[in-house]
Length: 372
Image (cartoon, rainbow, N blue to C red; front, side, top):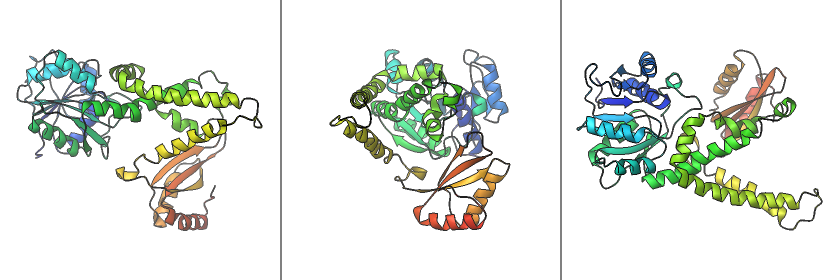
């Protein structure tokens, strides 16, 4: 038997279902509820827990007695669901996993909700897909789980949320609601806006132009395929912090546009200072990228990329990874770039610099064509 607390999950979309799956895998028996019968029964059928009564239908069936209630719902309904859970379960700790924290806490204060048993939190995990069917038991592994508490929060409640976060594989990061919202504005919300803006430029391009897309545009626009309704709520809920970062971004864009305008007459244009602006944009990007945590959250590591031609046939990528294992080289990262209209792709495998030479020799001897 698990020594994990009794958990009630309100909301069975991607995050709620993934949390249920992760808790079941850890040995717990979570209870699931959702306004949508289809959503909650699908989450149950996927193995995320057992069913409880839907909100507003508490008289139907036995009432759960949770130690922890997790509200996994869109930001616009989260405050009311948290308030209801605090009133309905007077012995339980209540947390929410919405991606904005300050606005939700402000709403709870306006509603007069006692906040001693409330702990705002946010697992920094997600996918481009949504809904219960996209749930994964490993979604939280190695991901930060932000826990927002203050002097009014009961320490017991904080420990309970931290315990559940650790049980599903997350690393607990304590932040205030303001610190959290400012951080996610820079590392999550503005990147979503930027990806969407860049992807929108592709909508009216010709087929030939879009056909030139390579790994660069795929990387930049990967998260653009997100739910507009959910992201409208997220951006509205964190409007102040997102706006502050966008103002800084606009200042840099204005400087870049001015420099490009001065160079608009051609590569030989004499535009003192303009090229320095272009170089600074790229160099500052290098500096920021170098701060992104590396594998397992460690300090950033400079890997060497070995590019290998991989035929577009079943089993070819698996054979490449197996040959890397035979060579005794650990794969750090991988990405694939498919050739336009060609029956092969390029697998860019990142390895530690000291292993790159040995890997190239081993793969060449094994018949692989390198693309370095």
